[in-house]
Amino acid sequence: MLDWKEVSLREEALRRAMLASDVSSLDKLLADDLVFVNYLGKKVTKQDDLEAHRQKVFQWHQLDIVAQDKRVIGGNVVTISEVVLAGVADGETFTERLVYTRVWRKDVEHGWQVTSGQCTRIQ
Picture 1 (cartoon, rainbow, N blue to C red):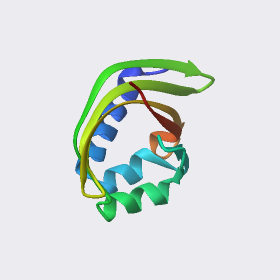
Picture 2: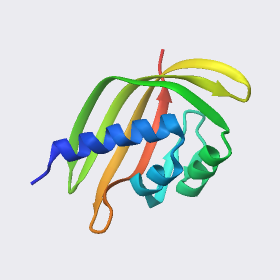
Picture 3: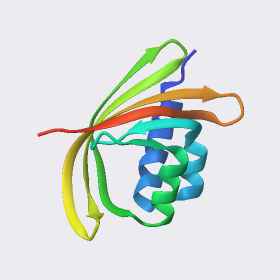
């Protein structure tokens, strides 16, 4: 049986880790085989993402979930989250409305981890 609360707690832990660039927490929440497509259409691996956080390529000051939906597909959970994201990237401040779609897979050793995802800019 699927525990929605566990997935919701992981989503919140991921949000906090992203805001803090907490590489240790991100390492636990992201599957080793992660493939993410950002809003520019670029494929990002787990190592790419962790390195970007280590190097402070961007700094996020706000990551608010406006709406969220969850669906079970097979043994995985798909989350669709509309967010407001604000911060600094390449020396420029920004505020964006985005939709993140993530596939969460339960790993025997690590629990629920993001195995794939994508982000789309919305108007």
